[in-house]
Length: 407
Image (cartoon, rainbow, N blue to C red; front, side, top):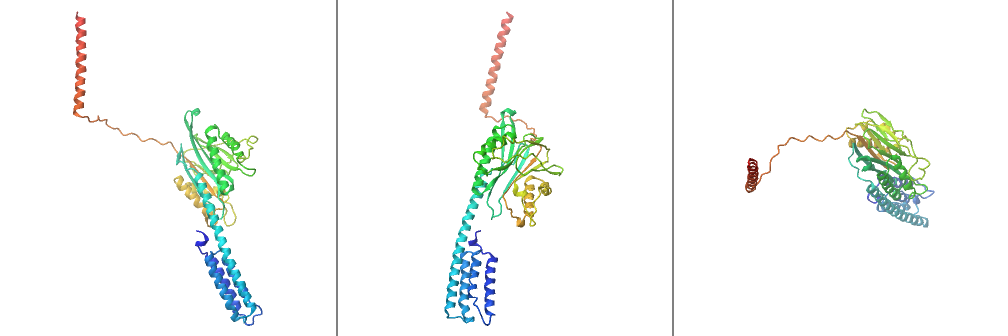
């Protein structure tokens, strides 16, 4: 809700407290050597910083009224100095109301821009399948605090069948974070997803996918633009292939509860055009049914508590022990919220949780007794006549043959 529809209590309280303090000091001064009238309008300046124009005007009117009335107890009523002080109070009050109106208008514009950026970012993020091959998939995206710009966090899953692989279904994932905020970051994130789908469809190895994406994105990224990414291939049911492009390491939880950060060789971020000199390398991790892999952006690893300490992904072991991946993802988000002050993130957060499952066993088909379809009596009679006719013809041919042989 924007500021024009909500009154911050602390702002109203601060402005009221200021008016009360100045009034008290003005009343207890028996022989005023200086007038405090000019201090009343400061309450309107306090109000315009947090209150909407309507309530700022209320505070300004109260301050002006007290400034006018102060002439009765400081013996300045009717003097030219008091008239000047009243004019000063009115001018300051008017300026405070105008400032409040301009501030609210800019806040509304910023809220609309952030909302548009969030909608655009959510629009480019695909809806991932719940199951891809032998892997269950759970994805989440969490926007940062309202005072933070929208980033370029992204994820995607690509499934396809390659004829050269004997029609074996291949499954690949990406999670990434584009350097940049706002609409520009969202636009580049959409371009990264397009590059991933193009490269994943035509390149054989995961390292080649990263190199192809780097060459493609270099033509669109500026000098200071890049994207950190982690590419994952889970086609082989016995192992996970990874290529790190300057991205935070994945968190691996084995079925027995053992946690570890996968120390994959870290290559350069994508879009820098340096993959020819620094080729990307694949990292292999064996896994079995029940193992889980958490992919995340730096919104998780850089989440800080009140003391400024970062959240270690290794602290999420209990959260990842939930019975299924959706419950585990909820537990992870809850743990991150408990670590940060008031549960507010300073950067967007994208999460992918993959779990290796067992092959689905098709249910046994129940034995069913085959029943012949019910036919009309006329159809049954026609079939019987045709059968009898064929039998007579066969009998006639048999008799002819016997007669010829007997001769």
